[in-house]
Length: 168
Ligand SMILES: Cc1cc2nc3c(=O)[nH]c(=O)nc-3n(C[C@H](O)[C@H](O)[C@H](O)COP(=O)(O)O)c2cc1C
Image (cartoon, rainbow, N blue to C red; front, side, top):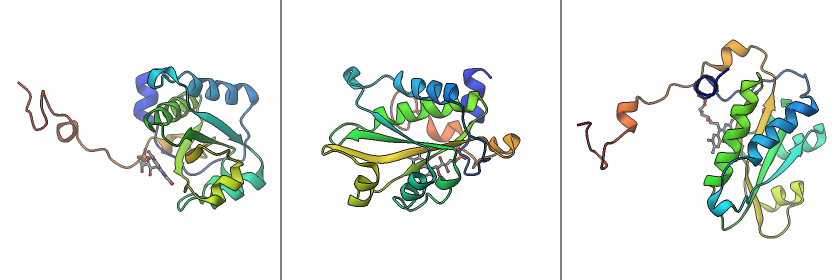
């Protein structure tokens, strides 16, 4: 799958097979996250890789829309310094998800609450917070993953030269 096809067909999937991800795949996904560029190359993200049923269950209680997390084969929580832009976390997360999808592995980003509960579950040191994680797993029906919610047309999203500007 080329990069454009992977980006275009990658949709967020909340159903996963019980099949585990092998070590090579997990390493490539983490490498894809690690290779994301970051502001002034600070590489502020730290990835907490979660595999045990107990930890996935505990993490799923750390956000409002994480019921699918215990079914995921693997979850990566993204820890960031509190003052740092979340743009860098987003770049790392999308790199990981696209790299995974190119190997047929579905994923879904999830939002965790910045609470004492989340901090306790993940053992976070002071100064770091986790606001997002990504659940990964093989999809039951890969053909269905490409069917997500529709996107707005480009004409609604793209402006030229200035906000509201039309194409010359
Ligand atoms: C920053 C962010 C946070 C998200 N948090 C959650 C979440 O907590 N739970 C969830 O099920 N989906 C979550 N999503 C997934 C979105 O709902 C999904 O990207 C959107 O519905 C588009 O889905 P599609 O690509 O399958 O069309 C999140 C996505 C982003 C980008």
